[in-house]
Every structure is written in structure tokens, then in C-alpha cells.
Length: 313
Ligand SMILES: Nc1ncnc2c1ncn2[C@@H]1O[C@H](COP(=O)(O)OP(=O)(O)OP(=O)(O)O)[C@@H](O)[C@H]1O
Ligand SMILES: [Mg+2]
Image (cartoon, rainbow, N blue to C red; front, top):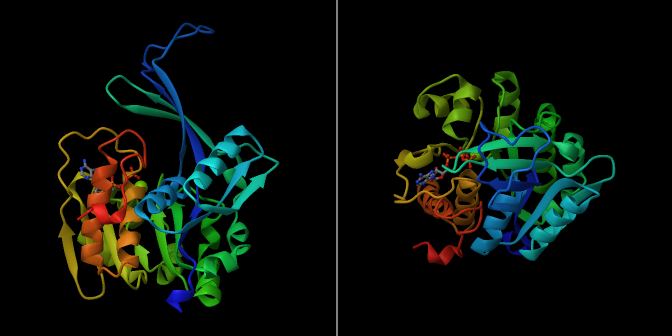
């Protein structure tokens, strides 16, 4: 069965562009109607489809994306950027009703970032957009969706989406979180039984569960039905990872000079999936994921520092 797979991971959810200006002192804007020079304005892609997708491609894996972009220049940028990494973009729909989702990022001289965001056509993303690509998903080992917390139109329908994908494709499912997920145990009890890999960050897990410690968060996710890998991303502390038999804190790889933490969570997910596909057990996959996410924070940009998997010893 595995040998017939032509893809390793299908990444679905957010694809957008970031327009990053620096340095911008947002406490002291130019006078109304005025103009202020900045050192640089950079256009790049963001969201889990772009970040995690490009990370996996750079690690050496075969990836497809499922999302939506507008019928505009920003949408061309997203599709061209993904295609440049040989990511299959047949699942990226072009929406003629709304613009490509985009964020203007104002970066202060000290690196602090302030976001101005438009959801654009991602407001129109539905689970049907994903179910339209069952054959693509069937050709893949893993389906990774993000972010719970930023897909309000899809979230009530995730149980149906995941159940259908399990029945029709047999893929393993990873769910990532972002933004402001709701505390909604009734929904989580219907979602988590289908999710093979659930490793939210500590802040998001705290909202989802109302718990404070990683152990208690994981216990709650298991009570809600999460069957296999459950963990918590702990930023500069690494992660807490569990499967049915074992639980471990896996410390982060020490980084002397953190340059830009953008995309660290996506790099962790990409690294974890890459290692899992290579046959590693969860604790070892988490160690590899920490190493890959640590390299992410050493350079500006979500995927800049990601290297082929074999270079992470
Ligand atoms: N300062 C750091 N030094 C080393 N590793 C780090 C650092 N910050 C983050 N990481 C790595 O990145 C992983 C993900 O970071 P984090 O826990 O912040 O996830 P996240 O909140 O999902 O991130 P994001 O803000 O990208 O969504 C961590 O588990 C860790 O491996
Ligand atoms: Mg995250």
C-alpha cells in the first residue's frame, strides 16, 4: 500500500502573503496623509500551507497544498512560490469573489511585530474544498490541516471531514492550532478521535482545555478521544510528547541568537511529519522536530534556514 503513495503529505488550510515593512515605529506614525521611508519592504508567503509545505519540500518530501487564493497578483505570488518548491498546487482554488488573504507586518527596530490582516478569500474556504480532492489525499500518506482557531467556517464540519477522509483514503491526520481556538469540548470530542497527531502550542492548548500543565492538557485531549500522538509545543523549552505507552519532555535545541521565530510551529510540524514518515517513533520524531524548528528561528523568514533532512544528524 505505502509503495503506491505518490505524495508524502497534503497540507490544507491557510495560504496567504505577508508584506513585511521594517523598521516601523507604530507608536510614532507619520503625520496623517504623510509618507515615511522604511529600510525594506519584503513580500513572502505565509500560513501553514506555505510554511509547512515549503519546509517539507526543502526537507526532501513530496507535498501538495489545498487552499484558496484570489484572482489577483498576490494569489499568483502564492501559487508561483509553492510551485518553485515543486509543491503540487492543483488543490489551490482561485476565488473570483475575494482577494488573496494577506498580512501587512510592521516590524519595530527591536524586532517586535504588529499585524494588519485581511482574511480575504479564506473566509470562503469550506470543508467541501478539501473533500473535492479526495483522490489527491488518497495518494498521500499524511493529511495535515491548520489552523484550528483560524478556520471558523470549517471548524463545525471537521468531524465530518476527518471521518470521510479516514473512510475514503485511510490517511493519517495531523491537526495544528493557531490564533484563538475556542474552548469547545463538545466539538473536540467529535474531532480528536480522528486525529492521529495533535501537538498544539502551550498557549492554544491552555485555551482549548482550560488546563495549565502539559500533563493535564494531554490528559484532557486523551479523555476527548485523541488516539495516538498527543503533545504540546513549548517554544524555547522544546516539547512534551506522548503516545499510548510513553510520555517525555524533549528539550529544545539551544539557539544562541534567535533571529525570527516566524514559522517555528510550522517547522516543528514539518520536522515531526518528516521524521515519522522516515519511520521514527514519536519521541525521536519530536527530537528531530525540535532540531528543525530550532534552525527555523536562526534566520529571517519561516522556511529560510530549513535544510534537507539528512543534514539534521
Ligand atoms: N527560542 C527557541 N529556541 C529553540 N527552539 C525554539 C525556540 N522557539 C521555538 N523553538 C522550537 O519551535 C517549536 C515550536 O515553537 P512554539 O512552541 O512557539 O510553537 P507555536 O506557538 O506553534 O509557534 P508559532 O508561533 O510559529 O505558531 C518548539 O517546540 C521548539 O522546538
Ligand atoms: Mg503555531
